[in-house]
Length: 200
Image 1 (cartoon, rainbow, N blue to C red):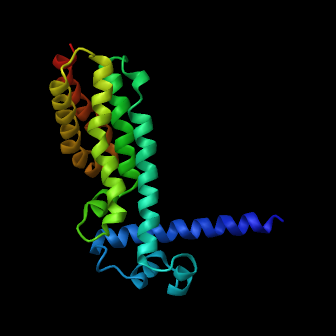
Image 2 (image 1 turned 180 degrees about the vertical axis):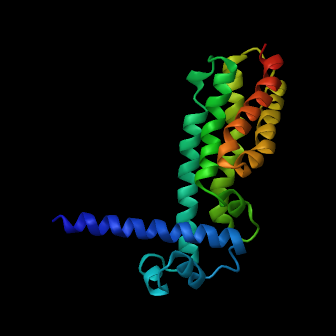
Image 3 (image 1 turned 90 degrees about the vertical axis):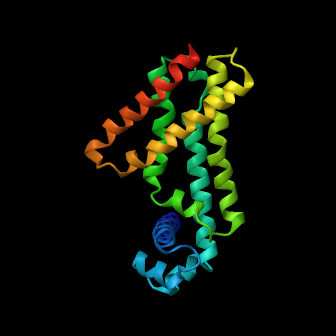
C-alpha cells in the first residue's frame, strides 16, 4: 500500500523535472526550435522516459502554462488584497510588489517564454490575460484607498504604477541576490513617491 504513494511522488518529481527542463529549453531556443530530445537531455533522462509522461512538446508547454497561470493567480491573491488597502503606503506597496517579484524569481524565463511569438496562442492567452489584469488589480486597491478619485485618473494612476513596476522588475531580477533587497526598496520608494501625491 505504501508503494503506490511513493510511486506517485516519484512520478510527480519526474514531471516537474521535465517541465523545468522544458522551460529552460523553450526560453533559450524558442518553442518552434525546441525538441523533446533536447528537453530530455537537459533533464538528464532518455527520450523514452520523457514520453512516459508527455506525448509531445505541446503537452510540456501546456503543463508549463498551467503552472505559470497557477503561480500568477497565487501571487495576485497575495499582492492585491483589498483589505490591506489602508495600510501605511510603504507597507501596502511592499505587500503588492513582493509576491510579484517572487513569482518571477521562482519561474525564470517564463515571462519571456509566454511573451514569445512562437508559442501557440491558446497556451499564451490565459497567462497574458492574468498579466494584463495587474493594472485592474492595482486600480481596485487605489479605488479603495482613494474612493473619490475620478475614473480616468484612477485608470491613469494604475497604469503608471504598473509601468513603474515593470520598468524596474528586470533590474530587480537581474541583481545579485546580495543586492536584490536594496533594489526592491528602490522600487518601493519609486512607487511610494509616485502614489503619495495622488492618494493624498
